[in-house]
Image (cartoon, rainbow, N blue to C red; front, side, top):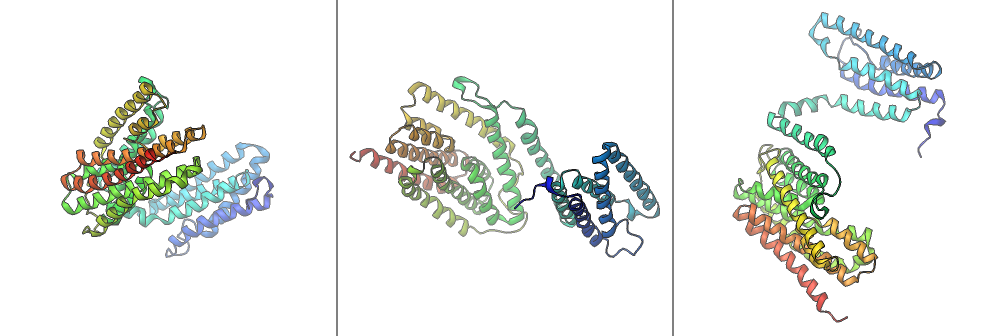
Length: 428
């Protein structure tokens, strides 16, 4: 049970301030445990006292105004600058400022504890302790980081945190089919898949990296992952192509449980009818995908892998263009034929995405659509999506990937369409 911070007494708040200082001080003291007594800038006791000092200044600030806190923090900064200048003058060891920054942070955390935010102070103290202790790991990562990888990370951050929020999140263009924000979000998604896949393969090796990338990326967009892996297969050797084929099929297999979960949440009455056909469609992709991944020889060295570019920006932009074209086609069918042609609309929508149309079918079922029509719409949607990814494999993949993926995905699509046909011909 969480405690309302407004109910904490000043003594309890000061205890949080002291605890925050002791947490940071424990890590700093451990790092400098070999330093001779008297040469440490600050140890566990000093950090505990700093937390208490900040807490007391916070209490004085609450009673006398923010000027007290400003003057106290300025005095602490001046003291840190003096200590830094003195230690830097003795030897090179004193030139690091991490401990001095931690000193100032601990003071601020102590003040936060008594200014109405003890939970924030406690959380930041724990995060700070962890971050300070990760120095060897973080420095090791930096030593291994190449410039191309750093550049790719900067580009991805620019695309997602700078460009994406600037785009209008509204329907534009003919029939309101194009939403710039959603289209660019898909571009960012496929670029992220490229980035995550590259590092997963570097860190985990080819096989394990492919498995984790396929599962997690498939939950977001198996179509985007299929496009990226198909493009990567063109420069891959036969063993890597088998891994990429298995990755595509494993990602595609995640679509079927995702559809089941969506139906369980939005239209639970349809779930019992859909479980068997969706399961039957999933079996070929799961079995063959796992088989490909298991049989592919894999070098688990950090540099091995068919994904050699940390950010496939060109491929991501191409996918965005294809997505925009398909969205236009889908809305054109909807406008020219109408909502009553639900299977035609589902077929066009399934070329790129299944989630949005699945939610539409669930809503239409709640509004009175016949159960058989809604079920057929979901199966057509999933079947066409499988065909779409088979086409992606054929157009952008190498010959080995085309043969492996297209055949299995076509089989899944045939299972779904055959089930639709049986529902359409069943007596009422």
